[in-house]
Picture 1 (tube, rainbow, N blue to C red):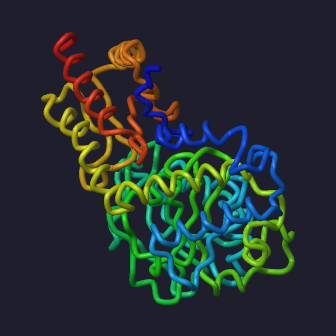
Picture 2: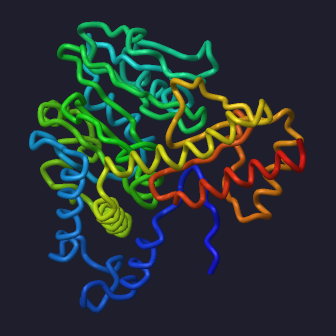
Picture 3: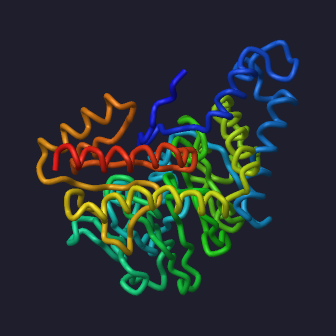
Length: 362
């Protein structure tokens, strides 16, 4: 079997070891006589997977005891609605940092629930940079400040987070860069992430939420949309996406076995440097889209001299075993998504292919 060089933006690459372990356990899980997909979510075996996965998230990400780790459904898109439903109260606006398509979707959902304000925006720069911390202006009585830590379409990432927010909770969509680098969880009120980029397959969403914000869940919204419902039931209020949670469990063990989150960050810096160097050393043949101080370690976006050349690049890359290098349909261009599970060898192969393509077509 020859593995593709998978640079898909999501669902994305999974560690080969994880896939092989899941394959071995697929038909029968730990002598139960059945697959984990066939198992009751109330069974002791599945509860063990659920609890162990939460504990691994706490260990790897340094999550304090006064936070809940929830495994929910509906993706980050459902969180765009659940966050204002739970946290946005009358007389207090929600503040949002507008940095691209995903932040914009979150803003649109919040506007359906209550008052929202734009605390900062990079729209005038075509979302090709992240606003600096000093640009973010938050009303003192804001219900929360929401930001998207990494925008997959533009390939931009916050390098630091605002800290002087007083009593305003910081909420972050970390769908595309969770566990890619260490962060101080205590600076955040809530973090959420769809699993399908850095944590596992699609189907489960991780929510890390502080106790006081859980306790504020309003009682006039359906139980399924309240954080306190899921916290009280340890993510087992309704039937969970059990196989996806199991896969997250294996990915978390893989991260731990490979040195933890700090080691992931170093790996990501090493492998993405290969591709950014190929761009920067091409004498303008390849042009990076994101401002250098906002460049993402997860999504590398770049352009070429014209769209025809970009189409040729994509076509030849596919013939050489590369997958997912076509840019998002809204912006075009080229994009390589280099999440935790994308091997160093894949990034090295891409950098070499880029240099070869330039030699042949420059």
